[in-house]
Image (cartoon, rainbow, N blue to C red; front, side, top):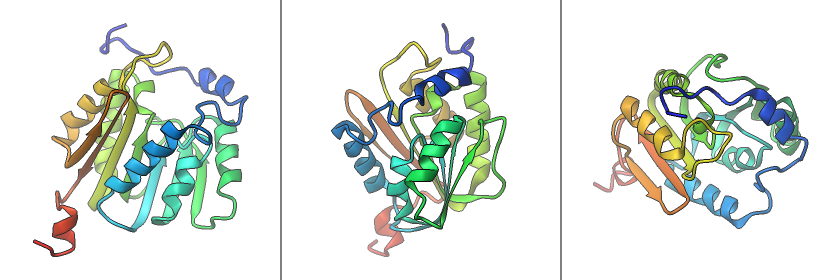
Length: 203
């Protein structure tokens, strides 16, 4: 299937996946723990006022992000995933988990951090383009978008990770920074383009 003709992955796929509590091994695989650490290390600020994580799954990244955010909204289209993430973050009063299907459903307000991790390739090309524009409009004047995606194609995903990041680059331009290896691509864009050193007046 070409990127231009691809359709968004059906929600039934995710309902079937979440018959298990951890279908992707977020809790058990070193690959996933390492990816979380890489993503968190790339963030240009230690703390964020209001963050949004799309596609929160069972809440493992949600909990890791919560330590860096005063308020965190985590969303997923699968009700079972939402229930798992709510249970995982139950002791974190500043975290809210909600069931939403993007880009058809979209939260109000703006965020200084948006995390778009392992979700973009489930969208069709037109939905990704729409989501990219809406992500841009949802960032506050000093906002950061970080995206992380598996690079290898798989049957259930209309797009691959490189196509997702190319689509985001059409909206956001070249990333401020990136990490890539044989399996994962992580890229970060900020509205101000200020480096960590600039933010801390080192230059």
